[in-house]
Every structure is written in structure tokens, then in C-alpha cells.
Length: 206
Image 1 (cartoon, rainbow, N blue to C red):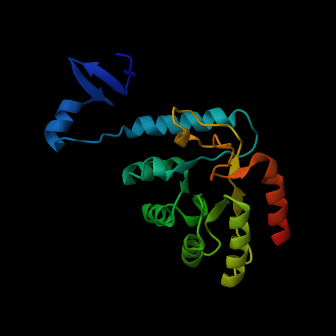
Image 2: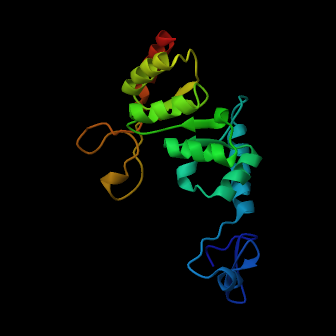
């Protein structure tokens, strides 16, 4: 079968096996519908991706796993042990990552159209410890004000860049970068040609 991968997905005696385990046996034991994750395969893909990226730079490379892709607790624990960091899209995901065992310093918060309330929640619980991935100039200005109000002198930030490359898909709603068909920039990230300006503004803020 086209989807068969040795040691991962295989057909044996007409039965699909995942990681060598019969899906028929799994269904009998746990019932259906049933979600099955092959942890070893996930870790293999993590290592493969990290190794490939590392070949092209002498700098430190780290992966921030996007929790929104799959927040399964066991998967997160295994990725944590493998050295992964976390990318959280909401304060609730930040808190879940903490509960799973990720230290605050290894969590990056990447929200979209981030509200003051969400940033307040993060700064109140983990002052200056969670890296915030800046999505807009507005967010940068508002974060500066909130840091002053909380008496936080320094914290790490990064910038979410919109490279202007449109996503794939048959519907305009799948656009993930660049501009929509009517020319309006999308909500995800700072345009590539404005990132340096955002960096300079952050430096001026201190």
C-alpha cells in the first residue's frame, strides 16, 4: 500500500499495524473510535528535522513544537525529554505546558491579534520568563507599557515574520502569509520589509 512505512504503518495478514501493533487488537481492547499515536515515529521525525536544519548553520538550533498541532500529554512529555521547546498560541496552552513539565524559559507565546488581557495573564503568572513572539507593532507598544506597569525590566522577545509567501490551498481562507486577494495584509506576523524597523523600535524601548 502507498501509505505503508516499514516499522510504522504496515499491513500484515490484511490488518493494519501501527508500530508493529495490530489495530484490530487495539480496537478490541480500547473500543472505537480510537486515536493511536506512534511515539517512536514522532520522535524519529523530531530528530530528523532537527538534524537536517542543523547541517546548514553553526548556530544553536532548537525546535519549538506548536502545541496546537497536537496537545496530547504523553506526546508533549516525550518531546520535552527529547529536548523540544514549546510554541503556545494561548495563555491556556502556556499553563498546560507548565503542568506537563516544560520550564517557563522554554516556552514561547505566539498569539494572533493578542489582547492586553492575554499578555497580562502571562506576565502576572510568569513575570519576564515566557518569551513573547511579537506579532505586530501594536503588540510591541502595548507590551512595553505592560512591562512598565508590572515593574519588569527585561524579558526576551522575538518577532513573528510574515515572509509574504502565500500558503497552499484551494480557498482564500487558507492564506497564511502575504496579502489577501483584495490587497489587505493578513493578521499573522510583521511584514518582512518591516522587521528591522520593529527590531530598532524594541531596542529603543530597552
